[in-house]
Image 1 (spheres, rainbow, N blue to C red):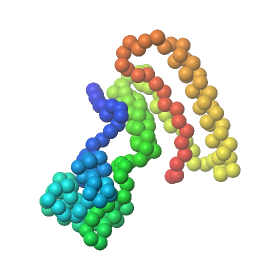
Image 2 (image 1 turned 135 degrees about the vertical axis):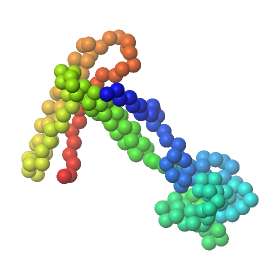
Image 3 (image 1 turned 60 degrees about the vertical axis):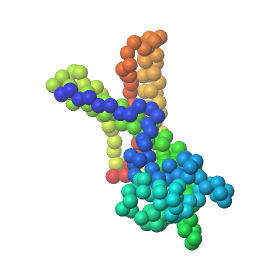
Image 4 (image 1 turned 120 degrees about the horizontal axis):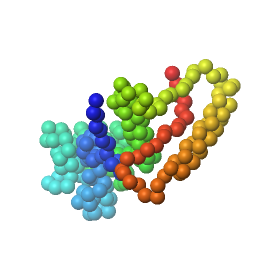
Length: 198
């Protein structure tokens, strides 16, 4: 088996239009100054309809002409992204709108990196199915039979063992490391403690 795969390089950015039309519309509105209303000094307010730079103009760009602007505005209002004025104006509630906040972005970054590392180990072992001596260690140990009383103790003791194990591996890496990288291939170990519901 010759499996090749690649994930996106840093900074793990995905175009808003690749996620959903709503995200693309809101992102364009927040970032494109041509859609900022400077007439009445309300930068995030657009007329529902207009010859140019209106909310309906944004809708036609990202949803097509078969979708009505009021319907999209209503849906975005239900999601808490916009407010609709009785006179037909649409206001973007957050002028710094992002499709994900900083914490979510950081979580996806770290989760993607962890998934990449774990998947690399799984793929290697699949490719080495007929070579057991070349397989890498990839194991999970878990139990559902530790009482609530002993759970804090187990959590503390296991994490302490993992910290000691991490220190031993780090010392080994430092001992074998060269002053400069000779290849772009990373060698590493994943160590983590987890709890979840059955």
